[in-house]
Image (cartoon, rainbow, N blue to C red; front, side, top):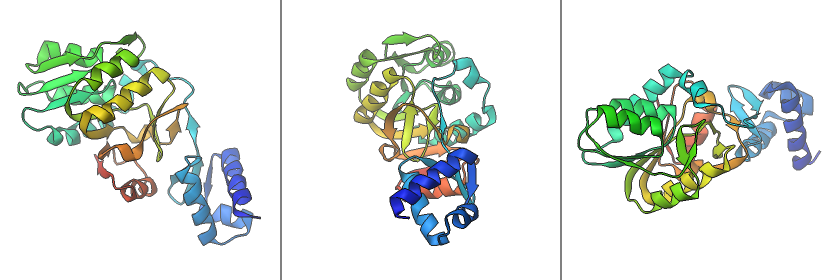
Length: 252
């Protein structure tokens, strides 16, 4: 069996069982561990499977994003830990961007006492919190309102961002893997990409429960980020691959 056929077979086997070990694949396909490792490296690089300890698992696909309330109740300790690790990156008198999301909302709660910051966001929850409880300068991007997400997105939001000069963008996502961050909402893509052009530093804040989930549109490759802050639930294989990409990885 030539490599391309074997790799196709590996993907089919794993998708049929959801999770398979390196040993299982070696035995089923009758090839060496070295060969399977080489195949898996190529398959994982393409985002077709996700690494787990001792093997791989099938990719979980997000057909549509959940309502904000779903994310508000999920991974609360992880979000608190991630936001705490993000805090030291915010220097005095910085202009920062807080992307729409509940992890970035957790970070917003930690900067309420700061009066030296300029905070830009497309998120109504974040701007409402900071309007009521902080003394920082606030800029809302405006744009087309997404009620479920309680935020603005679309081309007008992206254009507004491109007219700004941002020191650090804290970017969130509902799904991510070793390829990058994805979204089932096409209107969010232009916003994420505009941030890479307008920000000096890009930091991804995303909990490990979202890792290995992919959606229709690839918003940004993982290499676009300078730093990735997630929780300690991320598996070691994925952590190693991220570091190999030259991205600073912080585990909360």
